[in-house]
Length: 94
Image (tube, rainbow, N blue to C red; front, side, top):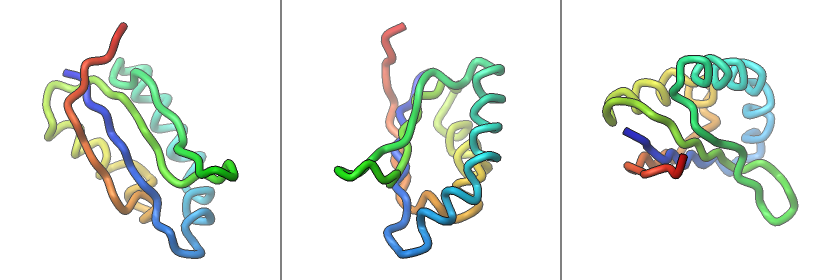
């Protein structure tokens, strides 16, 4: 089942620094999800000035619990980059 994940970063002064500090590990994790067939699409949400303020991903997992576990284990979650996460069932066009 596909899910759309919208994960917004914190808005404090250190939010972008936390994101950049965890970015390489996050990208490596996305590559692993892609290899496993879970990652469909995703990227950074930008503000009007081009600053990264969140992320969206479309993933394929058997159930919501699997998505929640994946998000909880992501470096951005562990580093308190993502502070507001929404997980919504989704039907991706493939």
